[in-house]
Image (cartoon, rainbow, N blue to C red; front, side, top):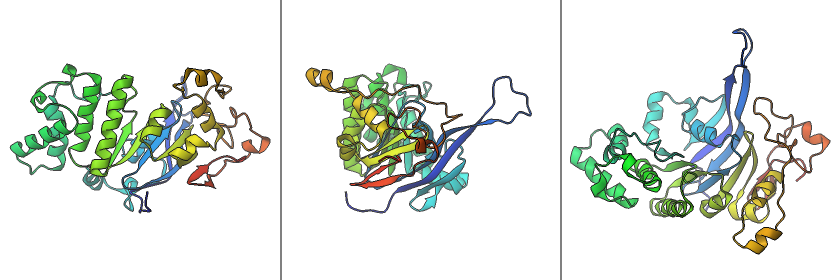
Length: 328
């Protein structure tokens, strides 16, 4: 990929939520749940950034913070040099057509009271109110056909479609305003494996055809490897590693990344039986009370005393690989 100015630049982004303890008095100080605690990354035009990590590590919260769907504590989210977090609602609305989102549950993300034609047309009516009704219908039929939904189904309701078809409708709704960035929040986790492959291939085709940038959030590292140019690994709201996809899978730099990759199933039964799985001790700590220093140290097999004294910065290991670990 040629060197280009970033489309999106996120710097030291923090999303903290106030949490009251059960039974606490009104004057009792609230706890801070640090869902995202200082995440930084760049996204170039036409690039796919995969984001992986366990449930509760902050993947979806990070995506929603970039889209201004949840309030942020600190940091920057620069869209072509303009800070989205400092914009007024009117200014942000003008940029929303450039950034769209696809959600995890395909059926739940579609209004059951609206036909799919109305659902897909809604963003057009919001961002391009000057279009006539025939023009809107033409755009809707065109984008539905592009994602594999027959235009004659335009007057049907979401419950009449399968999960895979509903996700295609969600993709059509995101594409209708011709965005530059689509954030995919675990878009295939609720689908069958065969349907997952169809949706992933569709997204890759659309990206190549339209020059889209993607942020692809998932649990399945094999899916992320297939679609991503670079991968960011999150742990408890912190970046553990950012690397080119091929480099990360070939030579993971962070112990947590090693554990995630070792758990990925191998299609070869013999190789699957012989592989060594890196099991992590203990459960994921609570983000209400994260460990001091390196947040992974309580589960890390190579942790030392210094790991609890300071938070490791992202270190450049070369070949586009950055790792937050004192011992690497």
